[in-house]
Length: 360
Ligand code: ADP
Ligand code: MG
Image 1: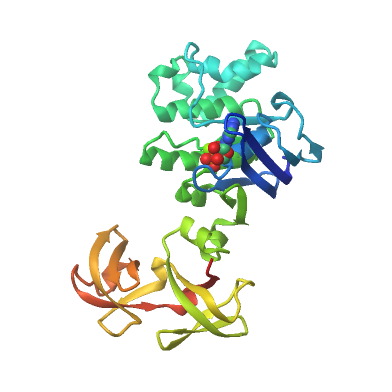
Image 2: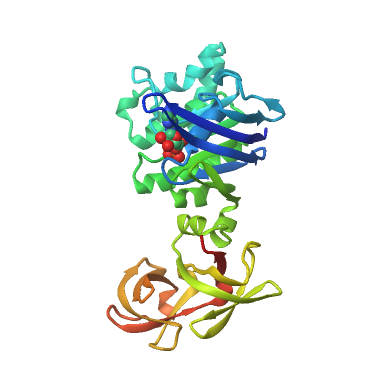
């Protein structure tokens, strides 16, 4: 098991035709611990793939260093790095069987026939494809093809596994199953891994830690729980989950509490972000589960139920208010009073579940 470290890594692409520069990755610094799975999460074009390609060696950094363990691999060619990459397009060899696709890397390494057979079959077993060894890839479903691609990359026992949106061609149900599979396999092999996605649910459910990126820059690094509960910015808060923001003035900061005046009512909100200061220029961040519905005028914000979305153990209630549309999540609805669509209601804020962020 090895660690992976990026030190001040920048990648600038020059567009010769238009004579312009694109800063695809802007001074990235992070370290992945041995056996850890880290996700690069961010909108399209934020530099996730470029970061991954530099780790794999397909792209050279403009500046900075990349270390695998203690070894500086910045200028090593891809085949000298002990990394394996799985792409969104599976990249299987169409004229070879599943077995031969998976065996490919071992054949290059000149293992004996028996060794190859044993390893290929046990790896196919691990990804649940043992019975399909003799099929052609074209006769497999998308999910099965992606499993072959995964098997082909893990069979060479890489120290670092790199996955670039590997599930985005699959349907929703399969995606959900496969992300659990990927995590199970990565953990059982103890491979250090980087997973790239723009899908927050995928990132949340797979990762030990998440790196949130925007415009080539790392905005926040943290566990899924930290990123969701304690985002360091409006961008991260909004990217990783549903959220409502209200402009507020912080009146005072006392013992890790922000005292705010919300429409004439004084609320104490836990303080955790060091950049929050007394004064305006702050926002109250409320997740759907930190809001509750009440009878009209009983809560802080008046509104009207626009639509209730039933999701079994929760209801997502979309409310029209003078702050715009706000979603309130009602957990265990059978224990709660449910307001019908079109009903006048009010929304109350649970201060302990909210956060104060600097308005950007
Ligand atoms: P992501 O994977 O997060 O969608 P990318 O890493 O693919 O983002 O791209 C980051 C930025 O770098 C984008 O603006 C993209 O257009 C640009 N870019 C990526 N590869 C190249 C390239 N080979 N030449 C020029 N620009 C590139
Ligand atoms: Mg990409």
